[in-house]
Image 1 (cartoon, rainbow, N blue to C red):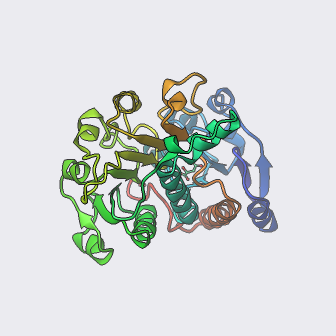
Image 2 (cartoon, protein in one colour):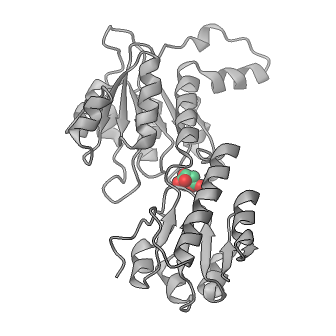
Image 3 (cartoon, rainbow, N blue to C red):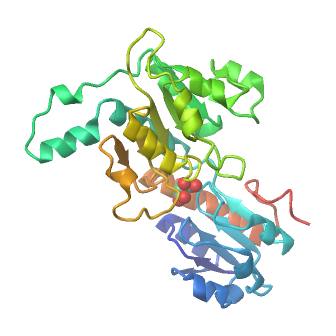
Length: 328
Ligand code: MLT
């Protein structure tokens, strides 16, 4: 039976599932130096989250035993999927398991920004009672722009509509009829999304195309006022991937007041270094990449990835193979 390395942790149930099928699971973080030195030579499979990076060099030093790479999560930007395909190694992920958790975190960040919850909490801890300084605005009646309109964005859009927001999206890969069914305005040009929305939430992958998609020019287009004239300011949330927002430009926009609040779960560099001026800004609040960090999501992620790994190990193709188009 197969030997599976699980380097960034996995739910107990998922480990039990693999072991019950007769596989040996080695739960241990393997650092980059050891991976480069060929630590994967003795494994048939590896399951990673985001901490372990699987580069081309690591793969070329991994011998020929490795048959599958599992990403216990959605984003595969930490794995060289092309290099894996060249070695005929499928990369499988768990794209649906954390959808609900990320939707809920996004809405949490949006509400926290608008009602100054983190700022009010920080102030109360200092013994202050700053009622006047904490006047917020409602989400009701405001325009929310979603960049990318996959499962998570559609879920965020539905909740936002229930709260009375008008939802817009920019997604060059989206068939127009999907936006229509979701009662969402589809923008062909990302700039018109920014021109129309006081609230922006990011839900696309990080690619060369989306690197710094949110930049100073685009943030400058945001209107700062709702359609009915309420000076609600401009707000940005990112629970997708770091690097889609230009963080230097975001800090400038917070300093100038063009952006009234920013809430990020993901960053250009993770972990964020202490003293980073963006996270210290009064109108910023953040979380340390915890979109999928719920008991429910991790249980689903583990189960989905264990099933996909077992499928490949038994000679079949998993539905969630992300590099199938590149495999020989
Ligand atoms: C994902 O891509 O699944 C999430 O961002 C969570 C993670 O990276 O672990």
